Amino acid sequence: MWNQCKLFILLVLMSALCISCHQLFDKPGVNYQYSIPDSLNDGLEVSSIEKEGLKKEYIVQMTNQIITDEYKNIHSVVVVKNNKLVYENYFNGYDREILHNLYSASKSFTSALVGIAIDNGFIPDTNAKVLPYFPEYTPVENNNSEKQGITIRHLLTMSSGLACDDWNESSPGRENNLYKQKDILKYLWNLPLITSPGSNPSYCSGGAITLSNIISKSTGQNYTDFAKATILDPLGITKYDWNYREKNRHDRPDQIYLRPRDMAKFGMVYLNGGKWKNRQIIPKLWVDASLQPKVKLGGLDYGFLWWMHPGTINGKQTYVYNASGNGGQFIFVIPELNMVVAMTGGNLDSSYTNQGLSILFNYIIPANIYKP
Image (cartoon, rainbow, N blue to C red):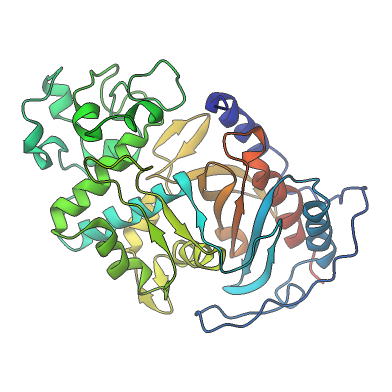
C-alpha cells in the first residue's frame, strides 16, 4: 500500500503552491469545446463560466490536460460558482450517473451528522464522553482516567490519544488492522493510550467509525436512515449507497457513494452556512465550528473532520476547505470565491491521489483572478 505519510507530505506541498498564480501551462491540449452543464431536475441551477466571472482559457486547458492524461485517471470535475453549476465533465469512461466511493471524504458527512444530532438534542455537546455510549465494552482494557475522559470532540479532531494511526504501519489501531477485527469498536477501545487525549493528533479512521455508532445509539435510528432524513432527502439526493459499518461486518466502514453533482450540493451547504434553498440543513454554528482550525494534522490545519489549506486569494489570506478521500475524491469549499469544486478519481493508494489539489490551484482558482 502507498505510504500514506508520503501521500500527505505531497498534499502539504501541493497546498503550498501559489494560489494566486495565473500563468497558463505551455503544453497545448486537445480541442475541447466548453458547454454549459445540462439543467436537470436536481436542484442545481446552471450558468456559464463566463457569466459567473471565470476565464474560459483556464478551464479549457484544465480539461485538455485531463483528456490527454497529463492528470492521471481523473473521473470527474464539477464546478459551482455563485451557487450555479458552471462546469461538469467526466473522463475515462465515467458519466454523471455513476456513483463514486468518497472513501475518507465520507468523514465530513459524519461530522455534519454529529452536528445535527447535537442540534436536535440527541447528543449533549462535543464534550460528551465516548465510553458511556458503549456499556457493552465495560470494563475496557488499558483503562484509566484519561481513556474515560475521551470526548466526541477528541474524535472529531483525531486526537483521542489511542494507539490508532492510519499513517503508521506499526500502529495496532491503523485502518487495515481494524478491518480485520470481528468487533472493530471493542478492539479499538481496548487499545492503550499513547498520548494524552487532545495533545497529539493522529489520523485514526476508528474515531469516525465510533462517531457513526454514537449517532445510531443516541438517535435510536440506523446511521444511514438518520443521514437520509437529515441530509440526503433535503438535498434531493436520491441515488446513493452508504455502507454503514456495524459490528460483525467486514466491509470498509462508513463510506458514502455519491454522484459528483450531489457531492457539490453537500459542499454548497457548507459554503452557505449550512443552508440549502433557504432551508437550514446543518446548524450554522456547527458549520462555522467545523471550518475553524482545531489541530495540526499532517502539517495542515484540521477542523471537525475537515481539512484546511491556507493561501492568498485576491490578496487576502484565507482558507480552502476540503473533504478528501483516497484515490482523488475531493469536495472543495472556497468562500472567498463563492465556489465549490467536486472531483473524483481512481488513484487509490497512489501518489496521484492528490492531483486534485494541483488542478484546483493551477487552473480553477486562477481562472477567478481575471474577470471577462
